Image (tube, rainbow, N blue to C red; front, side, top):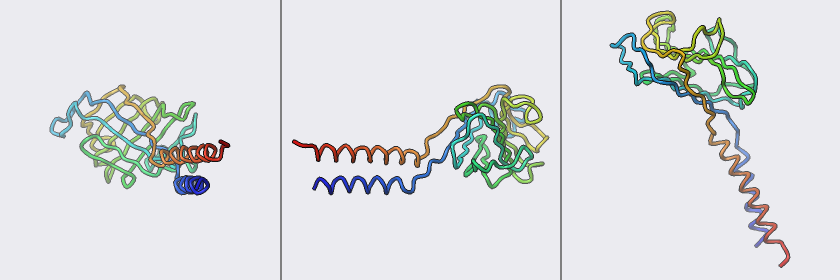
Length: 198
């Protein structure tokens, strides 16, 4: 009976751990727009940018990473971007749209400077959503969150030098890894207590 319980716990832990893959999710919440240049655009001073980037691996420390099609760089092979979305509350873009992402990380892999943007097709005339802070030229000359019609066209709404916050979000797979580890330790402890001399 004791052996059966231990084996069952061990098998369950292995089954949970086997398909687990630790993706890395970075989530951005911007501050509200302070300027609405085109009131008829539907934006207000309650509008703000959110973005989510899901990577295959945790972001490396002290690195410059680029993804996208807009000339900022080519994908970094060691950290594939698996999923992406950015929204200004009116429009949402994802990997199927034109994206332009440049990230600089700190000594713990946290995002410290960035340009994250996306646009409809064609970018030259469609809506563009961009958040950019902490980068030097040519990537960005000032920090701004904004929604723009056309790549160098009408600025619809924005805030300036008011960066939002990036947070790392635990993936369900990471939580499963933690659960599998705890279950394995529980099984080991159970075995020890059941087989200990009385």
